[in-house]
Length: 162
Image (cartoon, rainbow, N blue to C red; front, side, top):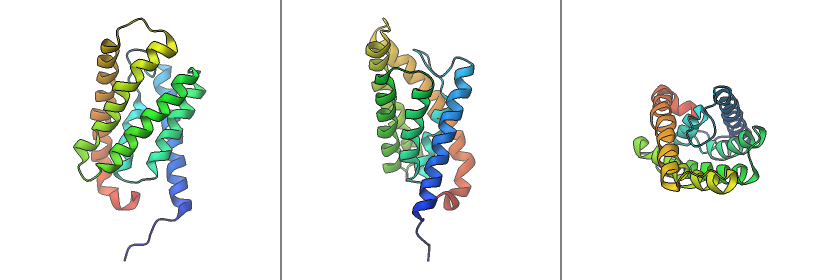
């Protein structure tokens, strides 16, 4: 009989995921990859974590909120980025039994939401459809490629992560 996860364990898992998200965003920022029209956020690879644990949902949202706030993002970006990440994380969790499909919600949420943040929060003059393409491409690389590789490396430890 499997024991249920303790609230303390879930809190620690969520906090660790949030901390990793912030650290990876800072790392990508050092190379100019984490913001702007063309983004490759290494931290977005962590969006596969709800496949393994529900604790990743608040962890990812909080991590995105903190990463954006601490890197000097505008308020619209801090709030909407966290909401996009939350939507993606919930979708990933709901599709967790189909890992390849579970990668789609964070890609879709960010592809749709972030271009509007870039336009109205930062005044980027590029067309929304163009920014959807560039942000979407970055999400496909971050979540679809790096996230999938993370999933492949962690799936053997799924029972321990649950």
